[in-house]
Length: 269
Image (cartoon, rainbow, N blue to C red):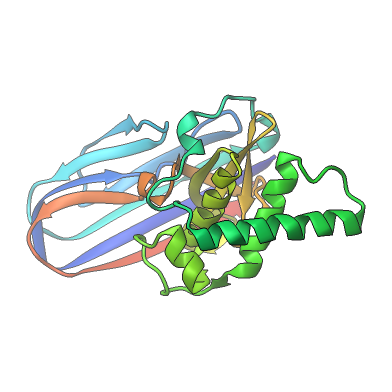
């Protein structure tokens, strides 16, 4: 178990004023069986908003800024108690078994999957481990294979990049690692879902994978090649990135935007 204090702030500056700005923010950490959160969301310009819940159980803040404004900022700060040992067994929804347009498999990816399975089997034999057919073994092996395949390269992809595109260019960022691992797990008939959140330290948000293993959702971080533990604070889950964007909205006005993101997570006393 860990007690965490966190701050997550995003500022969007517009080159020209905009108005009639409707927004949906998915920046509020989830409260669930293993994660209890107390947080406050502050917006600039100051405006009223409603907190709702989407179809995946993620909390979302919904509101509108009617007057002209040249900047929009949202900051979520608070504390969380995270204890993943408290995860309760739960059935996996069937939709986490099927590919999405962002996590579709290709013949080359299927060939890679076959090679990855063979490599995992060889490793199991050499190390004298237990049955290679276990779901946990498969998840760990594919996480290792994605980590070895990919190069972490900021700016090489966008939020629209698919698992196929990331696989073909062999590089990307955390969301690409996650979507590729999700595609491979689902191809093995293992339910898998995308998770976004923040971790200990400073920087920007992160993404990882949750796979349904023996009746429980377990986290795998292919970007760092480790299992997810209590240092990870989950914000949202979904089928892929498209279900978990931090911000979406519409506005009147045509202008360039500049976005600045900062997050900090520390262990609380």
